[in-house]
Image (cartoon, rainbow, N blue to C red; front, side, top):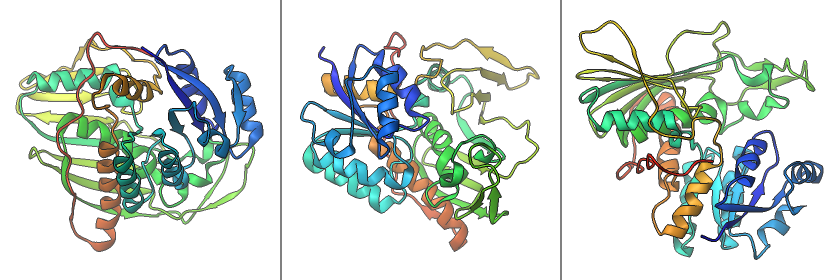
Length: 364
């Protein structure tokens, strides 16, 4: 199988783990990386032994590059995706697919018109932890899933991220930054969402950066930082999802749990690839840890790119699809809109669920 030729745009923090895994993969070959800051691009190219660092324009015009990995900031996702598609290249983009559903629609429509594939993070649902949960649900381990809860409760990234201001812009916040992990996992496990509602607030209008190198800088908050949402699924299940940057003292709440007619499934942190996976059966008072039935349990970022490259070769759908990412984006946008308009927001729906990974499948 010929290697898929990849170019990466956006050489920030997260690019390191992508490049570590992609450069080790037998399925792809990273030809170049690009960034608005050429020093960043050159440093990443040197660190991972890439053939070259270049400008975004040079990368997009390189005839050898078949697939773009778009790791730019959220506000640039749609623009870079459209430019990649217009250049005839498949594109895998960090979450979210776009800041607005209108922009995401344009990206997907353009890609369909040109026969180009679009994929989107998060890809953590392809890891051994959530794949094992899907297997358990499909086997009826907890009976019929009736409801679920998800909690992403943190104090915000200003204490550890070197440049956290973008987390508080429109298109970020806890919902758009971390919500995609939870929503993607829930959709993979339970299917499509039909409608959403929420309450969303901004308790602090400004935040102080306490990390280097911008210690003491104040950030103006432009998007809600505590969102309490309710999700109705086509299957009949109902989920509660709370995402927050306003929990200053921590919490012991589980990340994700699914409640069925015969038991409860505790899903691992959807921002990770591994476990633990636990079940508590009806009529018992003990949790049982379930051995993971799939690989890719370490930090496997890049697995969605590899699955996409393989899917192109094999002529099958890739799992972290643009349609899945659009459904996630529509749900997040709907949650914010529901709070403002004080009503339920109906979603356009999603046909089916991504296929599970093969148990003897590839690893990164």
